[in-house]
Structures are given as structure tokens and as C-alpha cells.
Amino acid sequence: MTWIDPSHPRFESLRVRARLAAAARAGVVVPEGLIAHGRGEAFDYFLGEQTTPSAARAIRAAAAWLRRARSPVLSVNGNVAALAAPEIAALSRALPTLKVEVNLFHRTPRRAAAIARRLRRAGVRRVLGVRPTARIRGLPSDRAWVDADGIAQADVCLIPLEDGDRAEALRRRGCRVISIDLNPLSRTSRVADLPIVDELSRALRALRKELERERSTPRAAPAPSAEWLLAEAIAAMRRRLATAATRGRSRRRRSAAPASRRRD
Ligand code: PTJ
Image (tube, rainbow, N blue to C red; front, side, top):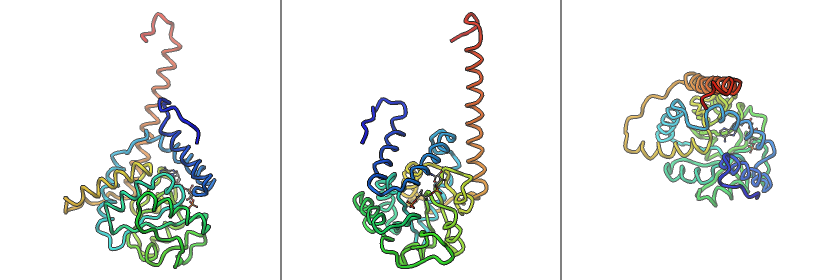
């Protein structure tokens, strides 16, 4: 892996990229996953690379849904395993009823096994979906292959970095869908019952904290509507872009002014 200087201003971002590139070389992440990551990064820039107050509310509601679920499942694809295996292990410790299932768009038995290995190595005790035992009807992609003990009978499903088709198919089956996707315009975000517009690792860390806090708070706050959450995410991005645009303009104006009138 390329050495990255920790003093680089974008050290964290470069480190994550290097990790994904290594996971792609190991066959865990598909090339399409690298494209998906780039898209996510762009939206995270617009959010200021932080969890917004509306995303924090969505995460609180997600913790309450997951804790109260009969059979909650977290769906894991290549990117999710590469980006957040330790966070997934921590989440499954915080909520022992949570099942972890490998579910892939670009499925091969080898990839599914490599992803499961990565999860187990990080500390996830039981990984479903390596040898799928059921199929979601009406879904043409390989995402339809699921585990009869997992997604097939889940009442709440947490689906990070997904595609809209399966989110829709899960909802048709009566499963409540919580998405994690930085793009508030994606079909997944638009279809989900509870869209969390936040970066995956940040959101999973915050979710674990909420689950731990949730144990001591018997009454859950009502979940905000999906429409409100998406509108708030878009508004947060617009505010940030507007601020960046005005800052850019005033900086340009300052540098165009004669030196005698410049204060900096
Ligand atoms: O491993 P596989 O075979 O299941 O394939 C996984 C990918 C990601 C390739 C597949 O699900 C895919 O093509 O996804 P999409 O349709 O590109 O959607 C991924 C979404 O995740 C996009 O809306 C991105 O903006 C978003 N995203 C990317 N990185 C992150 C993210 N959201 C949150 N956190 C991230 N780190």
C-alpha cells in the first residue's frame, strides 16, 4: 500500500481510498465500488464531512427501530466490508439480535466468502448470506439471493450503499428499510422508510453509541418522516455550498483590491 504522510491535509480521505484500492486488489471491492466511493466523497464534501443534526435524528430513530425489531438484519456488500468491518463488529456486539448478512450486486461465491472472512476477522461472530438459501421474488439482480434466516424474514433491514431496486423489493415484502447513503437523491434514499444521509463509518459509529444509550432510555423519540430527512439533507448541502460560494467571491474581491485597501 502507498505510504501516506499523516500530516497531509487530506490524510484521512487518502487513507480510506488506499484501503478501498487494496480491498479491490484483494477482490473484496469491485471496480464499480471505487466509482461509487468517489460519488459518495463528493456528497460528503457538500455535507462538510460531518454528521448533520437531521442525520443524527435519523440515527437515533434507527437505533430505536433496530432495538425493537423482531429480526433486524444489516446487509453488507464489498464496499461496506472494506470501509467498516470493525464498526460492524462493534454494532453487532451492541445489539446481539442484529444479524449480519453478505448481500452482493456483483455476486461470486469467492467474493462472498472473502467478505465473510473479513467480517469474521474483525469480530463478527455469525455471517449469513455466503451460501444463500432463498430468493427475493421480482428482483432481477443477484441481490435477490438472500439467507432464509436473515434478510428473507427480516422485519427491519439496514442497507448501506445500496441500489434502489432491492430497497423497493424489501418494502414490498413489508420489511422496514433504513438506508445509509450520502446521496439524498439516490433511489435508495428516496425509497427508504428511514434514510440516513451520512458517511457509512461515521453513521455506524454514531448508531452504536445510540444503541448503547438506548438501553437506558425506555421511550424512543418518534422517527422523523423520510421526506423531512431528505429535504433537510439537501438544505444542509445548499447552505454549505452557498457559504462556500460567498467565501470564494469575497476572497477573489480582496485579492483584486489594491494592496493599500487590503487588510490581510
Ligand atoms: O459489492 P457489491 O457487488 O454489492 O457492489 C457494491 C456497489 C457499491 C458497487 C453497488 O451497490 C453500487 O453500484 O452502488 P451505487 O448504485 O453506486 O450506490 C452506492 C451509493 O452509496 C451512492 O449513492 C453513493 O453516493 C453512496 N456512497 C458511496 N460511498 C459512501 C456512500 N454512502 C455513505 N458512505 C459512504 N462511504
